[in-house]
Image (cartoon, rainbow, N blue to C red; front, side, top):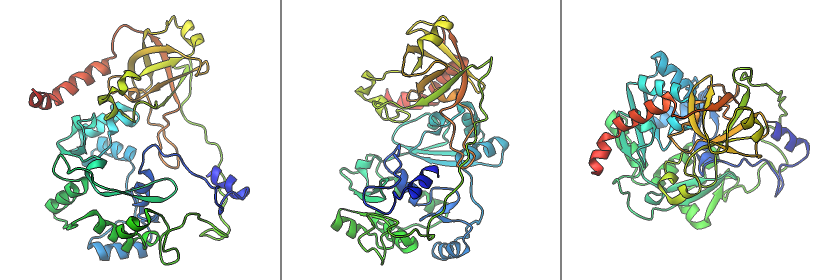
Amino acid sequence: MAMANLAMATGNLGRVGVGVNPLRGQNNVQGACDMGSFPHEFSGYRHVSDGAVRGMLELDWGVALQEEPGLRIPNMLDAAVEGSFKGLYVQGEDILQSDPDTQHVAAGLAAMECVVVQDLFLNETASYAHVFLPGASFLEKDGTFTNAERRINRVRKAVPPLAGKADWEATQDLSNALGYAMNYKHPSEIMDEIARLTPTFKGVSYAKLDALGSVQWPCNDAAPEGTPTMHIGHFVRGKGKFTITEFVPTDERTGPRFPLLLTTGRILSQYNVGAQTRRTENNVWHSEDVLEIHPHDAENRGINDGDWISLVSRSGETALRARFSDRVQPGVVYTTFHHAESGANVVTTDFSDRATNYPQYMVTAVEVRLTNRHSAWQSEAEEFRRQTRRVAADAAE
């Protein structure tokens, strides 16, 4: 919001070459948001409390829709532990490894009555799945990606799905089995429905995407070939709205018991939780998660470069190798979360942003000390992983 304030105040909107453009972590984050993956919005960023929108969708879909927002992932897990959230259908995401406070995520998954995981690989979340459905890669299905400049790009199937079905087909079959009829024959029909029910996508079709190569929404009667630049001359709400963005400090604090700040992130050679890239020769560049620590902090704790250390927070403990680094300041340590064996998120807390519930991966109070063994959590997780994967291991043999 502060960046939007700055762009408006300096006139850096509504012209070619200016604007606020988020660098997404995955290639279809924008598209997922456009299609209403938020618990409080329908497609096209229309709030669920809007009775007119709700009525239109209810008439088209033949169902009753709630006017209250649904739950975000952290709220789902809290509700599962409390006993009121019973089931989850997870497609293409490994929340057990990627979400903060791993032990709380595991408790939530274990408390649910039905967990369905659909993925290319048996990831960590799949260890808690009652049903596992094989997923399809981008090479095995038709569809679209939408990038951060609102550009809708076609994806074309190169090979038939190895599992027999594209993801949308599996979801459709599941919906039909549960009693809600879906009868799409091709993803283009899904896009036609999106265009019929979402004003900003009214003019989008596979035929238009094939003819033009790509289209930037809004694409409608006013802009039949899309909108490369938004906010020319005015905003949707008139002159725009400035929002006060006060700094709200995190509730996470360092102290005598946890004097260091842990920040986590990614490295180029591994992708997110590594479910795909850890199966490749990328491991030559990044074979394990390590803890980068400033030599001054290491010396104070008797730690040498390459030593096994215990990383401890209020949430949990894990063990990994120390690596001296001047990329981090004294008082700050850093690690990645690509390898399930180290499980960096067992240490991160459930503190989150007050507006979006986005986890505070960058601010966790920790202590670091020498160790010569894995943490209790790592040993238990490894045994649990072995037990839950034994069918797959037997099948491979």
